[in-house]
Length: 103
Image 1 (cartoon, one colour):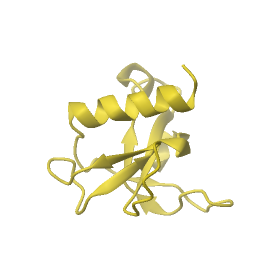
Image 2: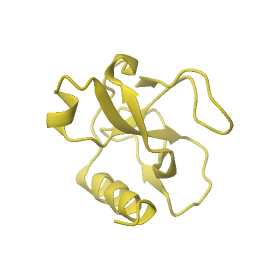
Image 3: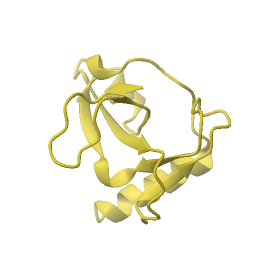
Image 4: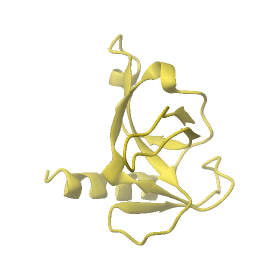
């Protein structure tokens, strides 16, 4: 769970689940930042949205990782850990990010 604070434009805001995509060495470093992908429960059928089932993820309902909203946030914005996404979701999020970032 991340507190994204006040939005500008169409940014995600408030407290909401997010998928942490930065590697543990960065997350555990003194950098004090974590790279996350916010989630939404609104289905928009965009290629940059990755479906996440509630099973094991800690989510209450089907949600979608909004990979186009990749964010670097202060680790102080992290509220708590809800759960873990499965390997398939991690793969699909990685694929969407590689596409969006042209990597």
